[in-house]
Image (tube, each protein chain N blue to C red):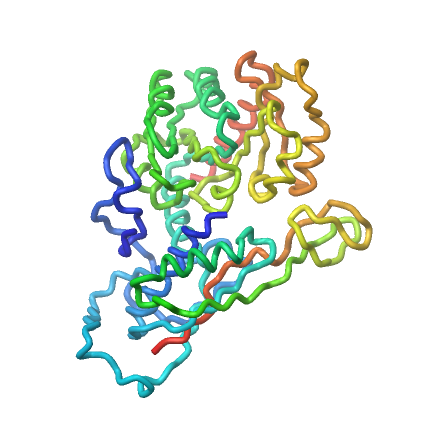
Length: 294
Length: 113
C-alpha cells in the first residue's frame, strides 16, 4: 500500500491503468495545524492530516539513532481520530466537487447478481434526452460492466479493485477526474458486488441505494444489516419473477425497516419496466435538488 | 467486515502522527470499537498484527476499548441499550429504533518510544 495517499499500489486499476500517480490534494486548513483535534463520534466527516507543510522531518531510523533499551522514555500520544478519517476526507472532497457542479450522485450497492448493471442500462436508456448520466463501475476484475454501459452511449469508467472488496473515496476521486461529468448530470457509482464492506466507505455520494433482487432471501436486510442501515432507498429488483417464487415482499420490507425505519422502497423490474417510472421520478427529484444547490 | 482496510487506516494514522510528533516506535495502540460498528474484534487483531509488521508499530500491543451500542426507541422516546443494529427495544419490544451510539471505530491513543 502506498503510504503517501493510501493507494493499493499494483492492485487498483482505473480503465486498465494503475490508479496511483502524483497528485495534489488541496486542504483548506493550510499550513498551520494543531494536533488536538476533537472528532466527536457523531461528526460525519473527519479530516485528513496530510498538510502541505514544507517542514521536513528527516529521521534516521538507523541503529545510530536508536535509544539504549530502558532509557528511551515511553510516552502517550493522543490520536482521537476515526479509522476511516482519511477515506472520509477524500469523500468530503468528492462531495464538494460534485455539489459545485450540481451533480446528483448515487452509490449503488448489492450482492453480486442482483441485476445492478442491467437496471443501470435500462435506467440510462429511459433517461435518454431527459437527463445526462455518467457511470463509475467497480469490480475486482474485467471491464465488462463499463463496456455494457458505454454501449448505451453514456460515459463510463471502470475501476478494478484487484483483491479489494469495496470502492473507496480515493479511487472514486481519481475516476471522477478521468470522466466527463457535465453540470447537473447524474453520476451512478456501481460498487463492487458485496453487501458487507462497501457499507462503511463513504464515496461522496448523496445516497447509497441498495438493490435486493427477489431471487435472494427476503431476510437479507437482517443478515447484512449495515448495508440496509446505510442506504436511503431499497430497490427490489426482478419483481417480474415474483409469481414463480415464495419471496414475500411485505416481509422483506419489514426486515429492511427493522434495521432502518426510514428506508424508502421501490419495487422494480429492469426486464419488464415495472416500477421504473417511480424510480426515475425518485432520481429526477434528487437531480433537481442537486441542481438547486449548485 | 473489512478489517484489513481498517488496519491499514490505523497504520496511516500512526505514520502521520509519527511524522508530526516525532516518534520512532509504537509499543501499544488503543482502538475504540463500538459494538455496532460491524468490526470483528478477533479479525481486527489478526489483521493488525499482519499490517503492522515491518512498520514502526511492528509488534505493538493492541488494546481494544469496546463501546456499548445504544439506540433511540421512537415508541418509548428513550435511549436504550442495543446489541444489534436491528435490535428490539428492551422496554416495548418494537423495532422503531435509531442507532445513537456504538458505531465508533477510532484510534484513541498510542504508547510511543
